Length: 388
Image (cartoon, rainbow, N blue to C red; front, side):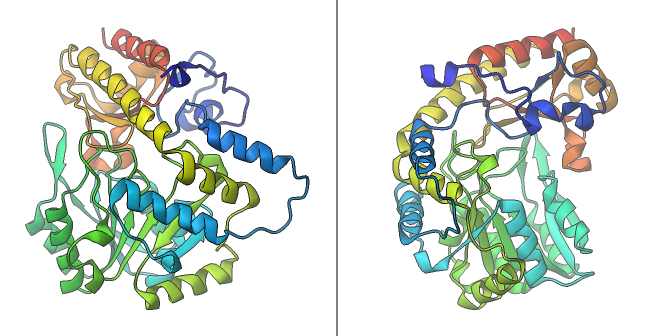
């Protein structure tokens, strides 16, 4: 576990997490602010990927590259072994990130003015990307009880009845860390079939299951009858966001060909040299690293629960999945502005405000706990200081 205890200086590395806070939080000086916001780990990438990239760098020619069959086999073996999901390699398309993949899916299967549904609180690009593509967003709040969320299927069906063309699913869910049950996913799929709605499933957090095993949407009963496209990536699992690599999976050949056509039009259906190398390395040799990561995250999360639940008005639980925790501060009586002002001005710590995930996130904060334990303790003390 000592691997995860190492603290690296990340300032002045063009890190979004560390070097963009001034712009994000509208602060002139962020030199004393500890970032615990964006979903980017402060752990170094696994040695297997560093070694593989170093070896590749020793060959000084970086021409056009394509993902070889070995890359596809590494992906399919990983998901078969970790998640009992058998993926046909021919159903894989490569993309330069999950967000670009989502943009391509929205462009391919919907038109300007179409309605796209989702359940809030939800990851901001789910609404930002379609809005930029001139689609209409229609939402249905998840039902919340003590920081845990569920679908109200009666309300969800009303959302489908409103005429949506696509529903965007986050599984596991960001920001609340829910792993959706097989039964609930089956109900969702049946709604998609009944109302002829495309289902876009973002499953980038699949490997970071803390308390509950993730169920791949495409393995659920009825999935073969529905129009489903799943997005996966190693970037969240192995802290490789800067590598820009993602994949889409759909067993429906008609959907795949349509999505491939869009990707070809944009020239975006490949991975760069270093992404090919990294994807193969982590999916071939990264299993033990992930097991160790999950154990480390559990310790961090239990510490956060122990410390923050001792503060009046604060409630937080260990999520099913992700390295993100959803803090309920409604009991403090503070407005979001008051809470954020305290955290940034007094605590000198940056968390995500809940309304970043739409109004259903009012009264919540998202904290990223994927950092060395000493950094986490520092962050928790800053939060406690801000709320004294």
